[in-house]
Length: 506
Image 1: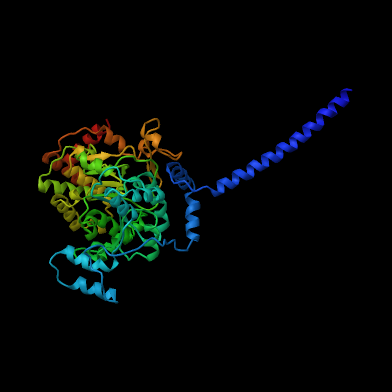
Image 2: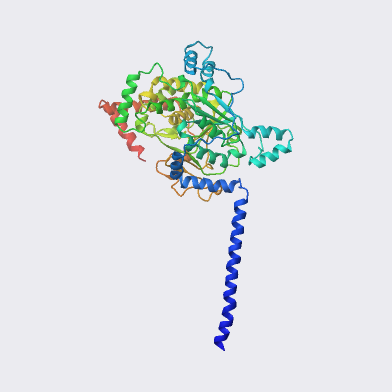
């Protein structure tokens, strides 16, 4: 009887199991069908996952981009001319450019505008058109914005733009960066982009970039004067200097184009004709990562709080690239009797430049400050010192030292809530902070706390008057060290230096 009872129980159990399996298979089929048919979500959760994929699988994406040679154009992208700019040009554009460059002009801005006009293109994004309609009371425009995933602006914008110096071959690297920047910040504000190149942009580049944002986009060529060796530089000597630096293994030591880039970012990009009516810029480079959501407008913050320059990474420059930049800066300060309340940030106890600077591949700053007579005078002084070509002065230490001379300490801001990576240098807000909760940071060391970071020095910096006497003393110490290096330092200088080195260790 027991055996019979077991068999009676076993038969219904087997049937139940089969029914359950069939039922479960039906549920799976129905769920998969529903998932395939549902519309794609456009929201912060999706963008976070995509951002996470980007920084974890960068090499894979780059490899796929190299194999993908098809242009990704959009039928909605229309390129036109900027309002007020010329619209008709002769067929031989090279001859046109040569003729413009050799003709007399009232001022450099008009000359440069005429020179580059054939290679300036503009795309008006949907965000501006729809926002204008919403401001006029259109509910239909609001519906269209929701359909496209465009967030209406809650407040008026600052007069600002993203500025991107880029080459056509860097398209795919920038599209990954642009997607993060849009998802993290610009989808809520719709600030315009300005792309600059020393060569004409390709149709593929312009259409692909414009198709990846709802904001306005302008593409422009750089004037020849802004990307060439000036007449006062001996090109043969500059060529030998590049060869010598390349032989010593200095990073970009043999590159002329890198020097053009540094000089352009130091003294010319803010003079570009397409930026003349812009007050603030956010510099963006291809291939960088943005890790944190920004729910406020950093441009408006800078404007409303009286800031003029900002950074996210501070580090030390390569000493072999700027051997005389500090000397020339001190000489400039001495001749103009410039004082500062925080120039000591850049000075070691021995009077030398400690090589600290703000990394300029990310910077949000005032174009009005860069256009000021004081900054123009400093750049012209450095330009005629020829260090951009005879050495390898970078725009980052130039901007940083200029800020130390010409700005007050409270006019410079560190954006602690912006997570950022450039090359192997990544930083994020401190773990446990409120800002960190809005970030997707990689599991990598935070450069803020690394030995090469100058951020701790910035946070510990206290305002201290830097006088004409301090400049003169620092310059004297630097020159004495130069004599020591050549073996002709006087005995009294040797003794003085020994004591400076001794007390500098404490």
